[in-house]
Amino acid sequence: MLVEKDTRTSSKAFDAIHCSWYNHHATQGDDAPDDVQACFLEKEGCSRTNHAQIVPYISAELRDHEELYQHVIKTFKALFEWVRQELERHLPEEYEILSQVASILPGNACSPVEPFTSLVININVSTRGHRDVGDREFCLVIPIGTFTGGSMVMVETGLVVDLHQGDMVVFRSCDVTHLNLHYKGQRASLVMHTDKEMQAWLKNRNGWAHNITMCSYADST
Image (cartoon, rainbow, N blue to C red; front, side):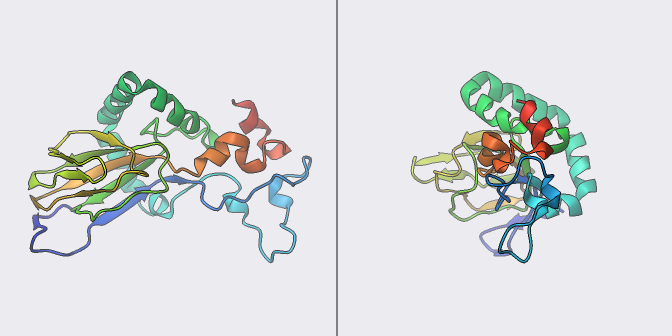
């Protein structure tokens, strides 16, 4: 829950819930036979084959906080649609690149934060300088709450952006070191992004596009 906080006097780490689609360490099928379903195959020389990561999968935090996630999606449905429209209008090329992944999630799943596939809910958020090297293209940040301070700093570009509740900033989080300054009050943020490893799923379904298991996925594009 959101609490009153002054980050100049408090060092407590903030809470974050990653409601994400991942494709990390995907089980590749480039050399697998075409006519055997992937779940019946075993990787040679390994004691265990990770069948759960043949296709992209949702984060454990999303499974553990499904009810909270659904409340957030319902509450911010109009906001997410406005974000989608603004991105499509102002960044059409980048929007198209990210939408390619969002449109081919396993099981015909739909991302409520399209064109992104992941939503991070940060609570009482205060970050140190970092890069999100696992992000594809760029991410989007929207702060929420009643607070003063908390400006976003983008180190390489030399920008300090004074963000207020409901403002939106889009930037290349994998390339630009970023942080937010100290704040006082109640502050959370919604962060939308896409896992960079989703590129392998987009390219050839993690090497399984030729397999009978993936026919429907491959035909969808």
